[in-house]
Image (cartoon, rainbow, N blue to C red; front, side, top):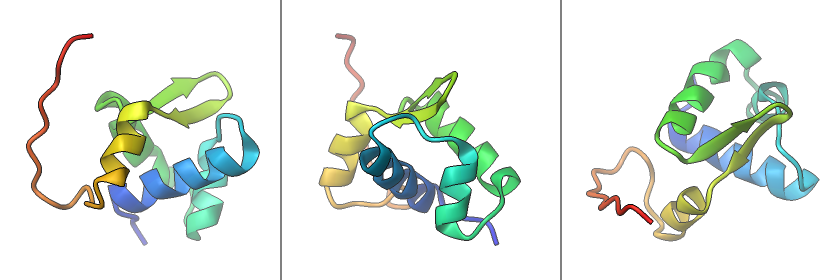
Length: 86
């Protein structure tokens, strides 16, 4: 069953916080009861929008992702985000 981007992001952050290191797609998939193939595309999309950083060891959440989740909204909600160059 396909997982929502929000579920994949939350699962990635939870796994990262539990292990204190980047997590692979297998770890995220296992926590969601999915296969790595089912979450791979979503992880890549979350990386492209800078919610995750891809490393050789897996994925880690960005500050942006954590701040976004603290707003208590899901990725399915319509949200305007102002991107500012640092």
